[in-house]
Length: 112
Image (cartoon, rainbow, N blue to C red; front, side, top):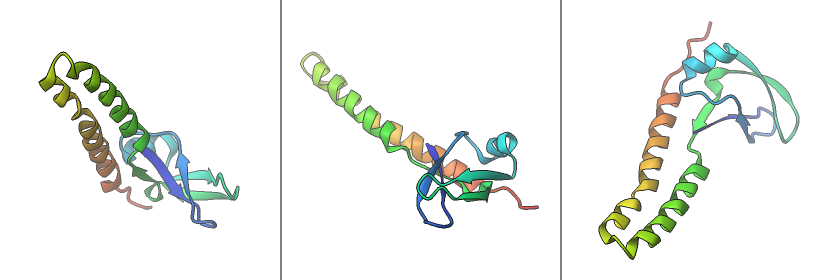
């Protein structure tokens, strides 16, 4: 999971750090409002933490897919059925990423 915000001027998605598991943890770390800078147009802006969204990190899924494909090819020559089970690892990573993303995005902080 990675956190992103949309620039109000150029409407491009930017990465946001630090990454936390829940919006409540993010609020405890950075507060209700956070100062952000767009990487493309260099506009500085204040964003409420409800405007920061979680998205699925496709790099993790691709990494799991590559590793499971290599392990499956190696295991296929020795253990056929176990190699098929290894193929399901990217699916499990994707499910976990989707759950954590939905959990972060479903919780909103009350504005004061």
